[in-house]
Length: 543
Image (cartoon, rainbow, N blue to C red; front, side):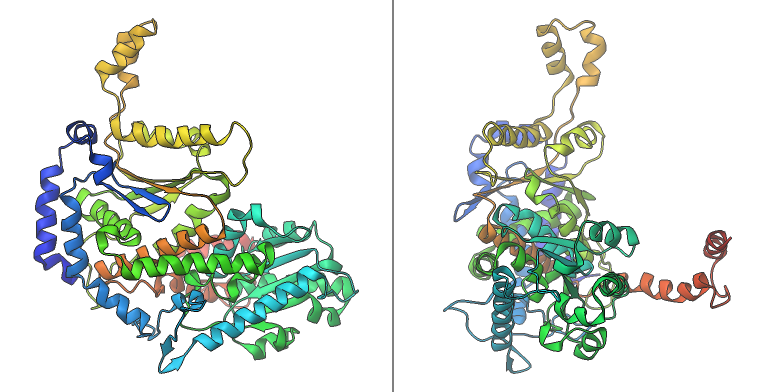
């Protein structure tokens, strides 16, 4: 059992939760007109509203006691000092170093080595490369400027920059299109290449080891596509790499001088800030990429210095723990009311579920309580016409996370006020619900036929907790801070549940089995040592 479960702070929170078990959110609002003021937190021009969570003002100090009991500040100090807090792999966790830029950025050390000169050197190389591509100085093998960039990666080498490129489309550099290919299914690469000209296309191969199966198969097929049109010598002008395996990069045909480094103290799902962000920097320009870094740095400083009840990442983490372990909620819907943030739920699935989807703690023991809920979501208002029916009347208790900007990134007249109205209405409806008596009065006032028959269908139980994050606008600085907010939330929950949030052994097991099955599927090995279902499926494909 993980240590925090035996602390007085945990026992106090359990007793408090028991007392709130049968209390409806609508009653909490009715009894406390100041609830919003007491349960919302501001940081700069951000607003985090927790008033629709199933808590009272007395809940938050109890949760802050859990922060203290788990010694979160001490773990923050360990991370910042470069200690190997990824203990199963013996690695430091220093994605914070990647945005430790500007005059205030001091040294950050791993094994006594200050990593900041290395970070600054890679950033300078990225800036020079972006300038060369944008200015037309970097040209393809036929002397034509680059019009399209294709990033080939998977996981952390794909989803972070892909999400951010879509989120910041309003800031994109004209005349340069950036595409992403990740899936091993040939449809992903084939449909991307179908609209491209090999003479003006640049590929970024993002793989730390240059051995990732999905990435290298797609890279090999992209190389075949290019050389079929331009010859093998063209590879050097149409491919660059983000990798540390320079020998493999060179063997592929890429000039090692065109390889951008990153380090083993950067986990894949935390690597957007590194050279993995090169396609994003090309998409929006390096100056905007630096604004993304400074936004993340601002959130870092907030997380490192603010007390837990004023600390946005801490509060998100503590509310998640409250809902999972004291309220008993097993899923969370992330609902950005922003089409530009359409990939954010998928990005957070990777960031949070790969980090915290675990049951063995740092001591090799079962945690002893539920950890991260299943995360899913879709942008509003699209989701309202899909799964919100289940949110309102499906009989499943879950939490929701609404997110919206005060001002739009695409200011089309008549759109944003309606978007805001829908976002705020949905969180209010989920909180309040509607009783049968209220439904009956409503139907009678509308002179609806058979109001007694229809009233039961109009009942909304309510009491569905939600958080709303109100952002000022969606720009590079805000997006950087937003991503860092969730990174620090993950870190905090890892400490609270005593998990290593930075390994991912669950990802490796399926890969191992796939590697053993591939020779059988290719017909180069007998089907031995596998279960009958897998053998039957392989046989059916081969027949």
